[in-house]
Image (cartoon, rainbow, N blue to C red; front, side, top):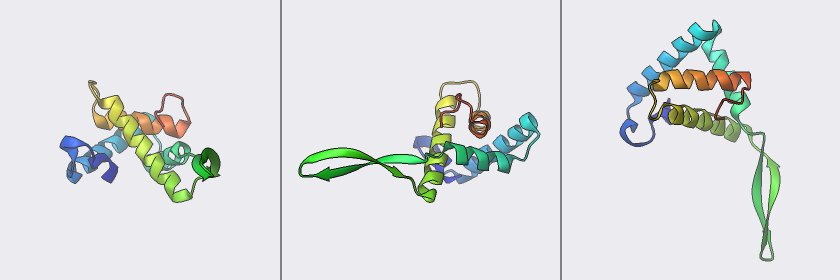
Length: 117
C-alpha cells in the first residue's frame, strides 16, 4: 500500500491506495478464481532479483562483482518493480490503476514476459 502512495498527486493518500489494492484483489479473483493473496506472494517471489552486482574498487580501478541479494531487499525490490510496472501501464491509458495492478500481479505470478518485473 505504501509504495502506491508515491509520486506527486497520490502522495500521502493512503485510503486511495487501499481502495486501489482492494479493487485489484477483486479483479484478480474474478479473472483467475484463485486466492489473490497467494497470487501476490507468487508475484513478489518471481519479481525479486536473485542476484545483483556491486562495485569493488581497488587501486583506482572499479569492477562489478556479482553477489546474492538478501531476502528483504529481494521482497522490497519486487514490490517496487510491480508497482512501477502498474503505474507505467496506467499512465495515459483508459484502464484504471487497479486493473493495471491486477494484470501486472497475474503476469508476474505466472512468470510471463509481459510483466514489467
